[in-house]
Image: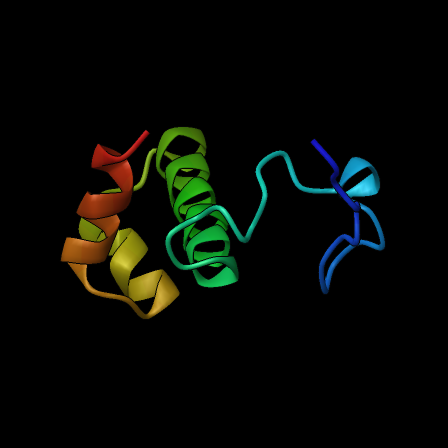
Length: 74
């Protein structure tokens, strides 16, 4: 198999990519990665600060449903 490692818009070569999973392999690319990072921050604040979903939603300017979704997905 002949494969030319041309990389992508984030790294000159796949082997030097900073991401643990290829953004082009994900369903929505960087949008999905951004959502994943936001969900990680919500979970961190929920467990670290012990805040309720309502408090987090108000603090972050998002809906309670978004906070609950982030807590369900792990």
